[in-house]
Image 1: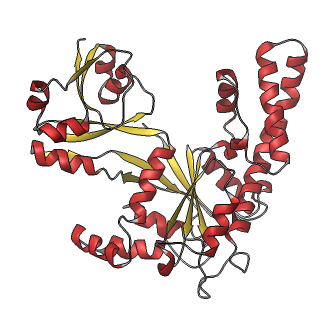
Image 2 (image 1 turned 120 degrees about the vertical axis):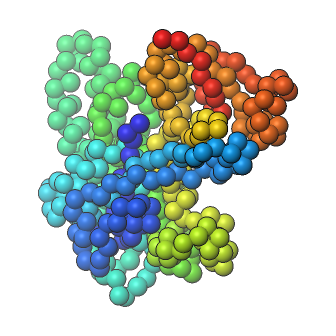
Length: 366
């Protein structure tokens, strides 16, 4: 499932440092604008504590977690929508992603230059929002003239398109992102999907703070939280420099001890990966056996045959049934056999909507 999140932000806000923490792929990180030119792509393991617990019960030969793609995209500056800086390349790269991780600088450091001279994360957010909005407005205006003529001629589909385009245009002209526009039905959602608007992508704001603010945030974070209160968006507080120090520690125990010392229960990297996974509307089902305990990615709301197809197309084509065990039941009873004996295994057909954490055996015939 080739879905990916793009890390975006102004130059020198910590995007590449954060990407290096997230990924085994090492992006160059330096104190000057446009350090990242070509997008770096990392395949990131999604942390899932359930795999380790199942492995304790099953004793498999291997554990296979699921993954998500993260893309580090070049920094953007004012005028990007007109081709300033690396604007056209930036906008083309972000269009190819499915969701956005927007990194905002929320720390003071005289040794790290800011492209605009001062630290103001709300202003930085507005700079990128404006450039994306201008490009979306260009897309809308290119479509709206053509569709309007078809709508006036009585074409039903064109009328739906024109209505959606007009609402998007009004919102963008008011400085709002496309994701703020409410869609009323499936037809409108289909139109929106086909537009591929940049400001319609789901977004996670990551406030990059100093070490002292990693646990509780600071005034910059408070300002960002206030600025996005009416957006359908999430916010996480992370100290990228601290995360880079955690990433250098060799053992799990050392990392946990470090986190406890700075007052955190979980690393910012883990929280970002989990949030990115959810941002892409993804969930996980599990398989557990002597050869492997494995996590599989599916789109939230998928039915049993679609999930079977994640493992192999033959499973979907010849789907008969899914034998489902809830994760909590598996842990409680300790084995598949004990779950069956307790009557807690569920037999589900083609209309079953998978739930996150379902443990499954598929039956099929081709």
